[in-house]
Image (tube, rainbow, N blue to C red; front, top):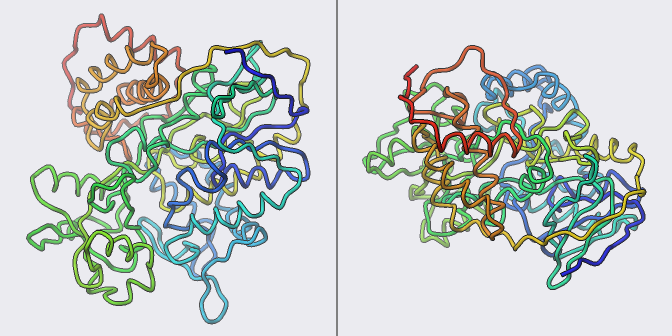
Length: 515
């Protein structure tokens, strides 16, 4: 089918309508911008599921330097310190921007913002909305603000399938809406498509969040960064629901403890206990489950009947699962939750491909390093949206190129690769398993089939994980449990990933080295 050409008059196009995309569009106003959403606006993506809040140093016992040091510590040596400093300094104003767009944050009787505590934070600095429904409140307010803004054109129920590139620059987007195929002519594209949790069987993300934006960028030739770092949330509700309901870290921040079926608090001797960094807690929980034990989060003593008031959404989720969280321990297990890696971008959100920016979870800014500090992700999305918008607005549109019809890839479906990804790229990784996964994923990625785009993303993560022969942050290699003193952030293109995977096919298996 020959696509219809859609001329948007040189306006920038934002792909994705979660918090990052919505905020970028709002910051671009009054410049005309087109917002592409694969679902009705405000209904898709991960943003609405966010229970935690936004980290910002607003408390009297807090400060920018403390937020900076907590973020660097969580990132386990791989954060870009300049990026971290810039973000923590901008975070308080980001809260003001959100309130200006209509977000109602939780406040105490004195009118001051309520500040919560989450893992690896030195003090209370988490700003919440609607208790444990911060993401839903942000999406509600920002969606309403976008619909009120005349300069934003919304294209709903339309999915980007490919970036169109000529002479090393973006010239358009191939998109599909129902039975309509269109090429949207633009030289300025912002990816705000979210994460990769949908590549895993156990995930807190919607199953449609399978790295779509990473596939778009990779297939267009852009450089990706730190792909091996996938964060697993330690306390997803252990149930058959997908996405798995999240039991927010804030519950542990209020004193809830993790126990096994024997009632043993197995994190008691771990530095930080239940509020140790997420990668530490997730691995300890995983080892309990791997040993055949069941794991529970017990909030009955610290919160009891008040849990329903402090965490109404979590209480409702538990009740629907037949659990009274005020008196009963909540069954939990780790689940894929957040991707520290993404499209490699500079301080303005520009990728290595001319005309392509990235914002939010799909981007790798250097903020998170090897392990994201809780509630820094929403802050990052809001803060960087302003910088991306400023950069996009300052880039002159280029309408001189002509768009050519392109082959329309099938609608992505990652279902057949989830078992491969879950087995090889989970909490504990091992070289031979990664090599076998790379071989399997390469054959799928090479075909033009529904699973190919997902296989491209998973293949690149597997190659990045193979290359990092150490354990750091969320990346743990059982065959390389030590840390590399000279470790650095990783960079990868689809071309180099395919070359590496092909080479694995003829290389004799090498003996793993323990460090």
